[in-house]
Length: 256
Picture 1 (cartoon, rainbow, N blue to C red):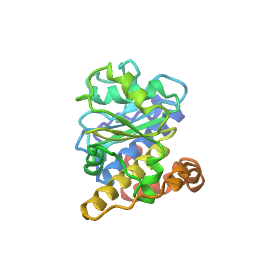
Picture 2: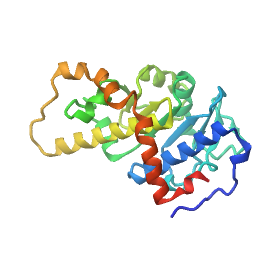
Picture 3: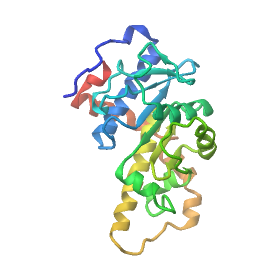
Picture 4: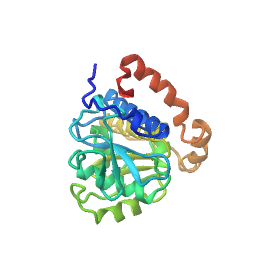
Protein backbone atom coordinates (compact mmCIF):
# COMPACT_ATOMS: atom_id res chain seq x y z
CA UNK A 1 0.00 0.00 0.00
CA UNK A 2 1.36 3.43 -0.90
CA UNK A 3 1.78 6.14 1.68
CA UNK A 4 0.48 9.70 1.53
CA UNK A 5 3.96 11.24 1.45
CA UNK A 6 2.73 14.83 1.22
CA UNK A 7 0.40 15.31 4.17
CA UNK A 8 -1.00 18.75 3.24
CA UNK A 9 -4.62 18.35 2.10
CA UNK A 10 -5.36 20.77 -0.74
CA UNK A 11 -9.02 19.80 -1.04
CA UNK A 12 -10.26 23.00 0.61
CA UNK A 13 -7.78 25.34 -1.08
CA UNK A 14 -8.85 24.82 -4.69
CA UNK A 15 -12.04 24.77 -6.73
CA UNK A 16 -14.17 21.64 -7.08
CA UNK A 17 -13.14 21.40 -10.73
CA UNK A 18 -9.44 21.60 -9.89
CA UNK A 19 -9.82 19.00 -7.18
CA UNK A 20 -11.48 16.58 -9.60
CA UNK A 21 -8.64 17.14 -12.07
CA UNK A 22 -6.15 16.45 -9.28
CA UNK A 23 -7.92 13.19 -8.42
CA UNK A 24 -7.96 12.08 -12.06
CA UNK A 25 -4.31 13.02 -12.58
CA UNK A 26 -3.20 11.21 -9.42
CA UNK A 27 -5.18 8.17 -10.63
CA UNK A 28 -3.38 8.38 -13.97
CA UNK A 29 0.00 8.28 -12.24
CA UNK A 30 -1.08 5.25 -10.21
CA UNK A 31 -2.32 3.48 -13.37
CA UNK A 32 0.95 4.13 -15.19
CA UNK A 33 2.77 2.54 -12.24
CA UNK A 34 0.28 -0.34 -12.16
CA UNK A 35 0.92 -1.15 -15.83
CA UNK A 36 4.69 -0.97 -15.32
CA UNK A 37 5.25 2.10 -17.49
CA UNK A 38 6.90 4.30 -14.86
CA UNK A 39 10.62 5.11 -14.78
CA UNK A 40 11.42 5.48 -11.07
CA UNK A 41 10.68 9.18 -10.33
CA UNK A 42 11.27 10.32 -13.91
CA UNK A 43 8.89 11.16 -16.79
CA UNK A 44 5.76 13.21 -16.26
CA UNK A 45 2.03 13.47 -16.66
CA UNK A 46 0.45 16.92 -16.55
CA UNK A 47 -3.11 18.28 -16.58
CA UNK A 48 -4.34 21.79 -17.23
CA UNK A 49 -6.06 23.48 -14.28
CA UNK A 50 -9.72 24.05 -15.23
CA UNK A 51 -11.07 27.56 -15.49
CA UNK A 52 -8.94 29.11 -18.18
CA UNK A 53 -5.90 29.68 -15.94
CA UNK A 54 -2.45 29.37 -17.50
CA UNK A 55 -1.54 26.75 -14.92
CA UNK A 56 -1.07 23.01 -15.03
CA UNK A 57 -0.54 20.26 -12.48
CA UNK A 58 2.48 17.95 -12.51
CA UNK A 59 4.19 15.45 -10.21
CA UNK A 60 6.40 16.48 -7.33
CA UNK A 61 9.96 15.54 -8.28
CA UNK A 62 11.13 12.63 -6.17
CA UNK A 63 7.83 10.83 -5.59
CA UNK A 64 7.22 7.42 -7.13
CA UNK A 65 4.19 7.29 -9.40
CA UNK A 66 2.59 4.75 -7.06
CA UNK A 67 2.79 7.35 -4.26
CA UNK A 68 1.01 10.15 -6.12
CA UNK A 69 -2.02 11.75 -4.50
CA UNK A 70 -4.34 14.58 -5.47
CA UNK A 71 -2.77 16.83 -2.83
CA UNK A 72 0.85 16.03 -3.71
CA UNK A 73 0.57 17.40 -7.26
CA UNK A 74 2.32 20.71 -7.90
CA UNK A 75 0.65 23.66 -9.67
CA UNK A 76 2.92 25.37 -12.20
CA UNK A 77 2.49 28.40 -14.46
CA UNK A 78 3.33 28.23 -18.16
CA UNK A 79 6.22 30.59 -17.42
CA UNK A 80 7.72 28.11 -14.95
CA UNK A 81 6.45 29.75 -11.78
CA UNK A 82 5.62 27.17 -9.11
CA UNK A 83 2.37 28.13 -7.36
CA UNK A 84 2.11 27.61 -3.59
CA UNK A 85 5.08 25.27 -3.40
CA UNK A 86 8.87 24.93 -3.36
CA UNK A 87 10.33 26.19 -6.68
CA UNK A 88 12.64 23.15 -6.69
CA UNK A 89 9.77 20.68 -6.43
CA UNK A 90 9.51 19.99 -10.20
CA UNK A 91 11.86 18.52 -12.80
CA UNK A 92 12.93 21.28 -15.24
CA UNK A 93 13.18 18.85 -18.16
CA UNK A 94 9.59 17.77 -17.63
CA UNK A 95 8.48 21.39 -17.45
CA UNK A 96 10.00 22.16 -20.87
CA UNK A 97 8.05 19.47 -22.71
CA UNK A 98 4.73 19.81 -20.92
CA UNK A 99 4.58 23.59 -20.78
CA UNK A 100 5.29 23.74 -24.51
CA UNK A 101 2.32 21.53 -25.35
CA UNK A 102 -0.10 23.14 -22.88
CA UNK A 103 0.81 26.62 -24.16
CA UNK A 104 0.52 25.77 -27.86
CA UNK A 105 -2.53 23.52 -27.66
CA UNK A 106 -5.55 24.92 -25.77
CA UNK A 107 -7.19 21.53 -26.29
CA UNK A 108 -4.36 19.78 -24.43
CA UNK A 109 -6.05 19.08 -21.13
CA UNK A 110 -3.56 16.32 -20.31
CA UNK A 111 -0.10 15.38 -21.60
CA UNK A 112 1.51 12.00 -20.84
CA UNK A 113 5.17 11.30 -21.62
CA UNK A 114 6.79 7.91 -20.91
CA UNK A 115 10.15 6.10 -21.25
CA UNK A 116 9.01 2.48 -21.53
CA UNK A 117 11.22 -0.25 -23.00
CA UNK A 118 8.95 -0.86 -25.97
CA UNK A 119 8.19 2.83 -26.55
CA UNK A 120 11.85 3.83 -26.59
CA UNK A 121 12.72 0.82 -28.75
CA UNK A 122 10.18 1.78 -31.41
CA UNK A 123 11.18 5.46 -31.18
CA UNK A 124 14.74 4.39 -32.04
CA UNK A 125 13.65 2.60 -35.23
CA UNK A 126 14.05 4.56 -38.46
CA UNK A 127 10.52 3.69 -39.66
CA UNK A 128 8.92 4.33 -36.27
CA UNK A 129 5.52 2.78 -35.60
CA UNK A 130 4.47 0.26 -38.24
CA UNK A 131 0.87 -0.53 -39.34
CA UNK A 132 1.16 -4.21 -38.51
CA UNK A 133 -1.63 -4.66 -35.96
CA UNK A 134 -5.17 -3.42 -35.47
CA UNK A 135 -4.03 -1.71 -32.28
CA UNK A 136 -1.25 0.14 -34.12
CA UNK A 137 -3.65 1.62 -36.67
CA UNK A 138 -5.26 3.99 -34.17
CA UNK A 139 -2.05 5.85 -33.27
CA UNK A 140 -0.47 5.26 -36.70
CA UNK A 141 -3.17 7.30 -38.42
CA UNK A 142 -2.23 10.41 -36.42
CA UNK A 143 1.38 9.76 -35.40
CA UNK A 144 3.89 12.62 -35.24
CA UNK A 145 7.65 12.52 -34.61
CA UNK A 146 10.17 14.80 -32.93
CA UNK A 147 13.93 14.34 -33.33
CA UNK A 148 16.08 13.95 -30.24
CA UNK A 149 17.87 17.13 -29.12
CA UNK A 150 19.33 15.94 -25.83
CA UNK A 151 17.82 16.28 -22.35
CA UNK A 152 14.88 18.68 -22.71
CA UNK A 153 16.31 21.69 -20.88
CA UNK A 154 16.57 24.10 -23.81
CA UNK A 155 13.58 26.45 -24.09
CA UNK A 156 14.35 26.89 -27.80
CA UNK A 157 13.27 23.29 -28.37
CA UNK A 158 9.67 24.16 -27.47
CA UNK A 159 8.88 25.69 -30.87
CA UNK A 160 10.24 22.70 -32.75
CA UNK A 161 8.42 20.24 -30.48
CA UNK A 162 5.00 21.84 -30.90
CA UNK A 163 5.57 22.33 -34.65
CA UNK A 164 6.28 18.60 -34.99
CA UNK A 165 3.27 17.71 -32.84
CA UNK A 166 0.91 19.91 -34.87
CA UNK A 167 -2.70 18.82 -34.28
CA UNK A 168 -1.74 15.22 -33.56
CA UNK A 169 -2.51 13.59 -30.22
CA UNK A 170 0.21 10.94 -30.51
CA UNK A 171 3.97 11.42 -30.76
CA UNK A 172 7.16 9.38 -30.74
CA UNK A 173 10.05 11.41 -29.41
CA UNK A 174 12.95 9.87 -31.34
CA UNK A 175 15.38 7.90 -29.16
CA UNK A 176 13.41 9.10 -26.14
CA UNK A 177 9.90 7.72 -25.67
CA UNK A 178 6.19 8.15 -26.25
CA UNK A 179 3.71 10.97 -25.72
CA UNK A 180 -0.08 11.23 -25.81
CA UNK A 181 -2.26 14.34 -25.58
CA UNK A 182 -5.96 14.50 -24.80
CA UNK A 183 -8.66 16.98 -23.78
CA UNK A 184 -9.07 15.05 -20.52
CA UNK A 185 -6.90 12.83 -18.35
CA UNK A 186 -9.11 9.91 -19.34
CA UNK A 187 -8.62 10.49 -23.06
CA UNK A 188 -4.87 10.96 -22.76
CA UNK A 189 -4.57 7.75 -20.73
CA UNK A 190 -6.48 5.75 -23.33
CA UNK A 191 -4.22 7.24 -26.02
CA UNK A 192 -1.00 6.26 -24.27
CA UNK A 193 -2.44 2.84 -23.43
CA UNK A 194 -3.10 2.13 -27.11
CA UNK A 195 0.25 3.56 -28.22
CA UNK A 196 2.22 1.59 -25.65
CA UNK A 197 0.44 -1.66 -26.53
CA UNK A 198 1.11 -1.03 -30.24
CA UNK A 199 4.81 -0.53 -29.52
CA UNK A 200 4.97 -3.71 -27.44
CA UNK A 201 3.23 -5.70 -30.17
CA UNK A 202 5.65 -4.36 -32.77
CA UNK A 203 8.75 -5.33 -30.78
CA UNK A 204 7.29 -8.79 -30.10
CA UNK A 205 6.41 -9.29 -33.78
CA UNK A 206 9.88 -8.22 -34.89
CA UNK A 207 11.52 -10.50 -32.34
CA UNK A 208 9.88 -13.48 -34.03
CA UNK A 209 12.22 -13.03 -36.97
CA UNK A 210 9.63 -13.62 -39.67
CA UNK A 211 8.53 -11.31 -42.44
CA UNK A 212 5.92 -8.84 -41.17
CA UNK A 213 2.60 -8.34 -42.96
CA UNK A 214 1.43 -4.71 -43.05
CA UNK A 215 -2.28 -3.80 -42.99
CA UNK A 216 -3.36 -2.76 -46.52
CA UNK A 217 -3.18 0.97 -47.18
CA UNK A 218 -6.91 1.49 -47.94
CA UNK A 219 -7.75 0.14 -44.50
CA UNK A 220 -5.12 2.35 -42.87
CA UNK A 221 -6.47 5.40 -44.72
CA UNK A 222 -9.97 4.80 -43.36
CA UNK A 223 -9.00 4.05 -39.78
CA UNK A 224 -9.56 7.52 -38.30
CA UNK A 225 -13.30 7.44 -39.01
CA UNK A 226 -13.50 3.87 -37.73
CA UNK A 227 -11.57 4.80 -34.59
CA UNK A 228 -14.02 7.58 -33.74
CA UNK A 229 -16.96 5.22 -34.13
CA UNK A 230 -15.37 2.36 -32.21
CA UNK A 231 -14.31 4.39 -29.18
CA UNK A 232 -17.03 7.10 -29.12
CA UNK A 233 -14.54 9.86 -29.81
CA UNK A 234 -11.23 9.33 -28.04
CA UNK A 235 -12.97 6.85 -25.77
CA UNK A 236 -11.57 7.86 -22.42
CA UNK A 237 -14.93 8.44 -20.78
CA UNK A 238 -15.93 4.88 -21.67
CA UNK A 239 -12.99 3.20 -19.92
CA UNK A 240 -12.12 5.68 -17.16
CA UNK A 241 -14.85 4.86 -14.59
CA UNK A 242 -13.88 1.19 -14.71
CA UNK A 243 -10.21 2.06 -14.28
CA UNK A 244 -11.02 4.17 -11.22
CA UNK A 245 -13.01 1.29 -9.74
CA UNK A 246 -9.97 -0.92 -10.28
CA UNK A 247 -7.75 1.56 -8.44
CA UNK A 248 -10.26 1.95 -5.61
CA UNK A 249 -10.20 -1.81 -5.05
CA UNK A 250 -6.40 -1.79 -4.89
CA UNK A 251 -5.78 1.43 -2.95
CA UNK A 252 -8.04 4.56 -2.92
CA UNK A 253 -5.22 6.65 -1.42
CA UNK A 254 -4.72 8.57 -4.67
CA UNK A 255 -7.89 10.50 -3.80
CA UNK A 256 -6.27 12.18 -0.75
